[in-house]
Image (tube, rainbow, N blue to C red; front, side, top):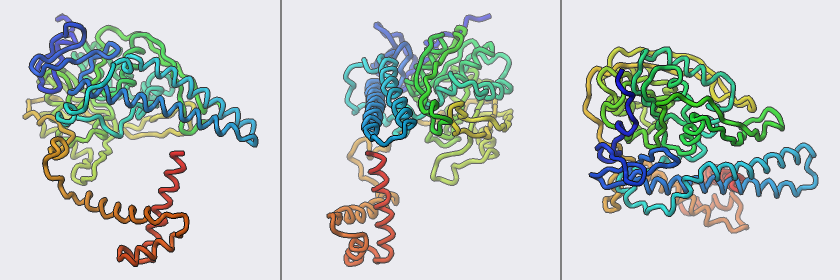
Length: 453
């Protein structure tokens, strides 16, 4: 039997796709791009602009730490109310103490990232047309960590059973794109004879927890359920632990849209709950997966097919996805649908059954590689191109002009009716219509102020 492949042999520069070499100190380097890719808590940190990405994640960790501090302080002020029910006071004290302890635990867990020093400026980051998704914070999928490594609800086993039922007997080199905290990658690696299983995710909190737990380390963090079942469930201290994984399970930090691996490096690529959150057309994602697979390798998808795009033509059905897979170098497409529990915390009433779609396709031929992913257009990168008069921009500009005018009318004296008359006098809107628009705007402003306070 051939020796198991080393992770380092499969890595490539996310800028130019060239092979990476070990750096003299630690980490990797691209000699062509002259970029050093560090290790973060032992994990390769392979973003195309590593120093800027480190800075972005440091800022997100600090933001979460400040949020925990602010929540504890807000609860402390609410506890000054002498008319609180004893049960309410007990609950608030529990959550306040949990927030403070979570702050300490999170700061310790993310210490390797926070010790990264001063981040670089963002010029290179912007020039490469890359950025971390603004809607993906440090805690965006925090509940998934508890599902992966703490809850005993059967969700992990259900997902693993479905995927395992469609895997080849000897998957060889496996890549899990968008692996989160890595429970599915861990389960598959433990249950198969894969030589190497690589779990790639862009979130250092998720990947870091997965890497540590799969090595046998126990980690404690607090769960704050959305809809707690009882007072004790408002804040629950969870322990994440597992049997150490067998050799060959590796975690890598990087962007799935610029996957830092050599072409045709893997025998199988698995995309769990990924196609519905990436800003790529499904066909383009299929092309990128094709490039990561050796000929005869398999693409296994698992999760939702609910596409988040304003373009109706790109909100594909299962039948359309199967057809697109066939047009991007794959054949022998098999698929199934299953209903499984989803995010059913034992401490929360907030859970549901989800219908998931799974398909497997074999790479029959190599197709033309998709152009390198660029999240930002030229006019945003250089600042020298004309800003396009997009319809959405024009609509927003018109709305902002009206809202700015309304905000300027707030003086503590005028009523909504007074403001509506002034909008009509300015020939911006009829008074009757303006009253409803102003009221809706003021409701949003009022509700936002309550949330922010």
